[in-house]
Image 1: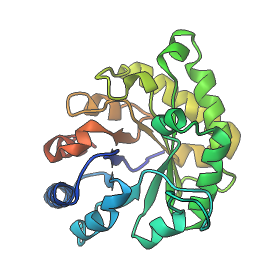
Image 2 (image 1 turned 135 degrees about the vertical axis):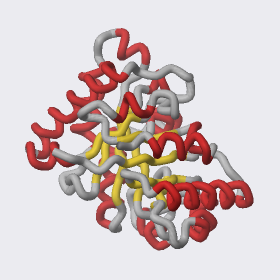
Image 3 (image 1 turned 30 degrees about the vertical axis):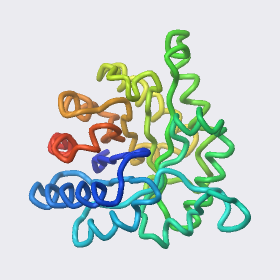
Length: 251
């Protein structure tokens, strides 16, 4: 089953208005000239959503956010609802990133609630799963990712509105990367979990991104794997040249 490659940039807590606008404009210009065989998404911090949306105007680069609350509105100081993100021009929202699961103690149930709310608001979701180094060394990579997929995906999830991102926690921001074969093994397992949860038809069409330090040097080899449908890019998405180089690898 052919799945459209998705290259998504997660800017994390980086960027002020001036450099955020410049980065978005450069990415948009590069993508226009490339005409890549992939969908391209950038996910800046909340403070840059409006700025980046303007910078991307007229391009095919999509806009996403890095988190949302499970409620539409209310007394939730410091939070942003999915309805607000949609109103700001977002197409996607990243949910359950390992940094939020760790730093904010987010559970699978909370990620699922957020995803349900985001889908209801008309956003597409990227749901992140992945094991720590200790869990991998204990041989629990499949067990951990399976539990996260089963617990985090809402009933409304399908191949059109949901993307899974496998991000081995030990490979995020460390410079370490799972080998293409190691990454593919987990992706293939996640695909089978999706078959059991959503059915073969949905599972064969749902995209699974690799999110563990993908960069220009390893992107082509990772994306070439059967069950790796693109990347959720962290550090390399903050440099237009590197992000563009990864986009170019999408064949």
